[in-house]
Amino acid sequence: MKQPPSSTFHSPSSLPHLGLPHRPPFVFVRELIRCDTGTFAETATSFAADDPIFAGHFPGNPLVPGVILTEALAQTAGIAAASGYAKAAKPLFLLSAIRGMKFLRAVRPGEEIDLRAEKVAQVGDLLQFKVDASVSGVRVAEGQLVLSLAVNPEIELK
Image 1 (cartoon, one colour):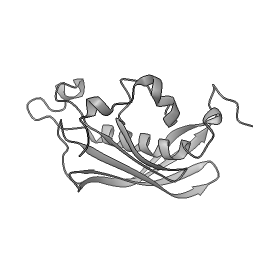
Image 2 (cartoon, rainbow, N blue to C red):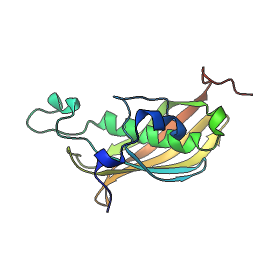
Image 3 (cartoon, rainbow, N blue to C red):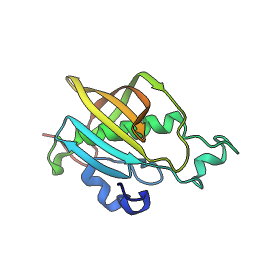
């Protein structure tokens, strides 16, 4: 059984090793479950009922916004992509395309969300990932995301 999100959240100082340039409050990955170098990542997240996003989405009937779920999946894909590079040379990956994203059921505050991203193709600096999210083993979202390799202003790639 997984631990509560509060005990598995990676602190901001530990996030760079995952290859994410994001910082709170825009980090949606709470736990790294599995990572296969450069090709696959599985993460988990959840959102507390008092998270500010629910104040307006939707009052009295809070739902995790699909765009936030998509961003959490993009962060999972970014972790998979960045894991294929040495820690000192991690490039930046930018979300470039969202293809066929489907939301199969609403996700509510407090639900543990499992996120998976698997690289299915790469053409030059574009990496395509098949992504899905599930709650209690039931798929809640699926689609494909394309990340583009960008120059990290903090690291000069050679």
